[in-house]
Image (cartoon, rainbow, N blue to C red; front, side, top):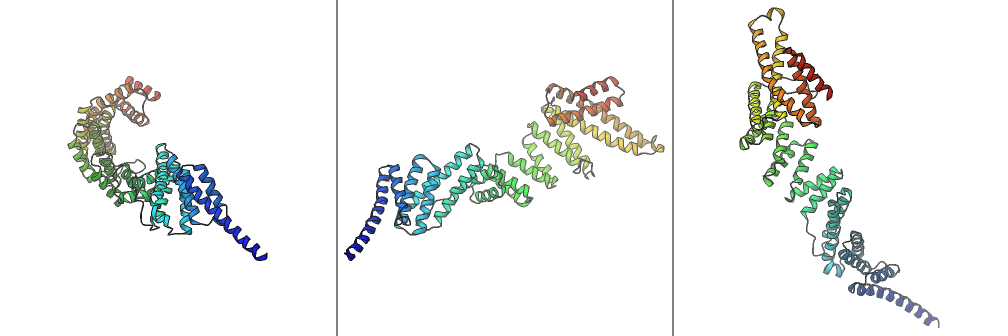
Length: 415
């Protein structure tokens, strides 16, 4: 009896293990018939049993169930359950036959489902969530590819870029930087924004060599995107390479002589290069080619006004060019001692001041009319208009026109 009893115990244990393995087989059968609830119940029963919970096949079948659900319902949550289940199966048996035969397609479906969740969140501008899903998709791809199971998930260059873009938008700039650099190495050309954002990153990091190299790449890949020309000009401006900047702008103006905004920008840049200021806005030493730059700026302002004669900003800028030169000559005049005030040099300076003030006046008056007609002004235009009115007030005062001085004062008070 004792031997029979022991034999029965062993038989009972074997029967129990067989029953649980039958649950795994039943789960597979239910999966084939798309009886997902039954399949999930069966596999959870197998996982609750000591005899089958550490069996690679059990975890692999769970992965298949949730991978099928993920593909059917486009569910990232199910896809992530499938991923963890497949990982567990491979942890128990790294070379299980089923993995070698069919895991590539299943793992790709998991990867794609998670990646698509990233795109969905990206479209809704949920940057943190989008970045999280993209990161997970990259993890899934890299995990499977390192297993050497006879296949691989190819790198989606677009996803590499969008992972970086989502990270950038989420404020994770260091993470973004790495993904964006990888996307460039992969020669992703689907979005010019890749090189816009990467160039900005290099600029912020003070890496001038890679900043201009990225802009150069962008101009080759996207020759019709004007943003990269603007970025190139910003590079030359911020790095103090004014000769290169001016040469480039001259080329652009010659190629686009009817582009008012471009011509005006060129004139303003020439003006700024000729009249440099420090970080506090104070005047610093003029360049050696000051007169040449100012003559070019004057000609460019006039060209802009030929294109748009009534433009308030262009009129103000040309008026300011003459006015500021008058101020500079007036400083020279005031620096003369009393004995020199009747000298030929003093008379020459007085003539220049008067002539330049007279030249500036009609442009300031046109600018005044233009800004007044606009009604509500943007903050930058408002500051320009204030400068215009202050200049007019001084000119009218010099010309002894108190009524006009009072009228301008009212306009200033209204601002």
